[in-house]
Length: 115
Length: 112
Image (cartoon, rainbow over all chains, first blue to last red; front, side):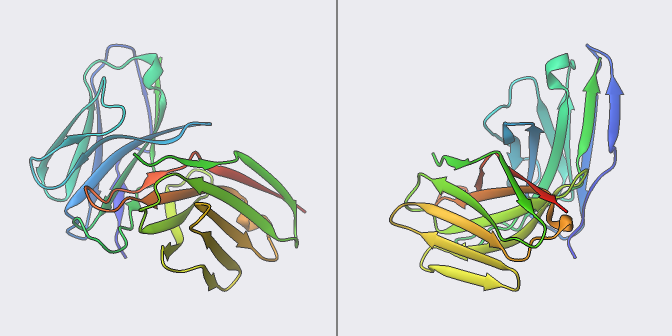
């Protein structure tokens, strides 16, 4: 089974701190994604990556950056955390672009609280 | 781009059938998905349907697709308390990045 591992399940940070959220997948998937999930708003795509060192903005990239130095690892960075970034962050991966079914495999999520 | 709409809540009694509805806007969507999120967990794929199909059945799950009305539904037969979760509908656009667009999720609450 494909596994997507988010190393931090719960984090509490202070306003202005730099925050790193790490995600690792073990099935050689080309594509990786970061979403945030808020009640009533569902999943919103922050950034995605087609391949190593490649990144694309999603729907809500402001205040975030990403890094993909290795194929299996995709990091989400909050340069200066703010209280409105308190949320659940979900990482996902899938095989490369395909005209068939594009099934995403999700990690368990990282719940970030910014005080 | 694609918009996917779902109602936010559904409450059913244990043993009844649940029907979760979804509408989408992109008529060229090729695949439509249902994901389930249990409390404290990430999303897991439940099932998906290709756009040239009307129905797909998998044990207690039945997916109906009305392509003309751009309406998708998920029926869960004999709903159990373990089915309590958030259910997300997603539509996959044709071409481009093929990244599915998710609805806001429907919280299914099953009462004993």
